[in-house]
Image (tube, rainbow, N blue to C red; front, side, top):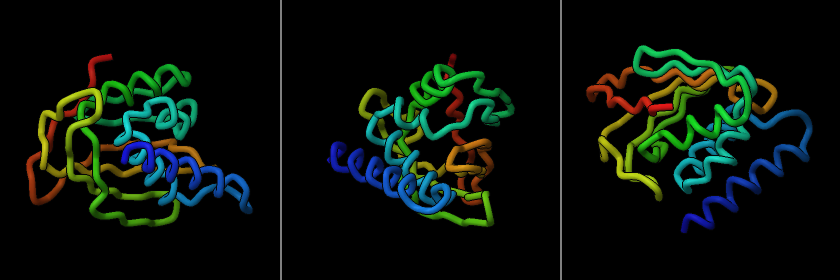
Length: 144
């Protein structure tokens, strides 16, 4: 099943690259979630721009390079099954139900998490975790 998710995410990215212009913000968010859920930190990292800003749990950081993006994705303990997407231009507010990743047990399985993800030129330039109104926030800040 993970293999099929990875193939689907890869085909979505290839299809977007072959079309006119960049991938849609929603398709980039879906591809990132699929790669993360499959444990593919390399492909997940490829969806982030250099200097992408991450705001999570009160902490802020910027990816200086691809290695920073790989490390951050690898440090996320939970997968995130998308249950809702709201798109406004370059911004997608994604709501996820958290679960275990292939390489780690989730610290809040079944809880919801939400992030505002800004996509420009087919790359994530901002990933900002925001509160979910109906559940308490889950701390998922990796140790990097």
